[in-house]
Length: 203
Image 1 (tube, rainbow, N blue to C red):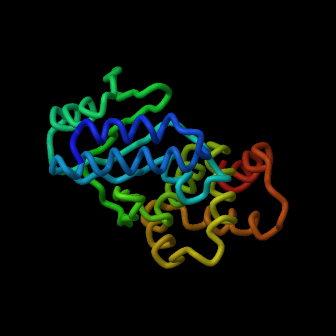
Image 2: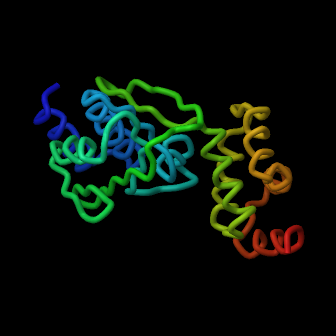
């Protein structure tokens, strides 16, 4: 596909009447494909990766990519060729915001074919792990809520050994066990309950 065809595909994806998660996934796939064509390796991370795997847990219009292989100038050239406007650290199309917070992807990722496009997303174990770590070390109850929602959504699908190894390195494996118990209770926790749980175990 040409640059103009990719730009048109991005605009059509984001401005369509599809479900929000479908718009996010298709837009991210177009962007990933454009960056790949320009000699880069782009991986979707952060909140949009949560929405990809567990759309009921999180919704966002911010796409965070780790992009390897080229300079910031090359990234800017590719994203502006998609008719995105540079605004500070973001590239923007309407209310879609793209950010590139890193240039090295250390965690494993998976690739998915989305129509004629390819989307690479960090594996779900690491998406969940980041929220557990954020809850443990930053005391952010919102991350705890998202983690419980993802645990519910991923039931039976997780590589538990890989997740635990990641959390062990970050000193948060015990937090995973606490959140597993909350998930198993069948009653969705509140932010207030997660805040109290954090103080009970970590303050």
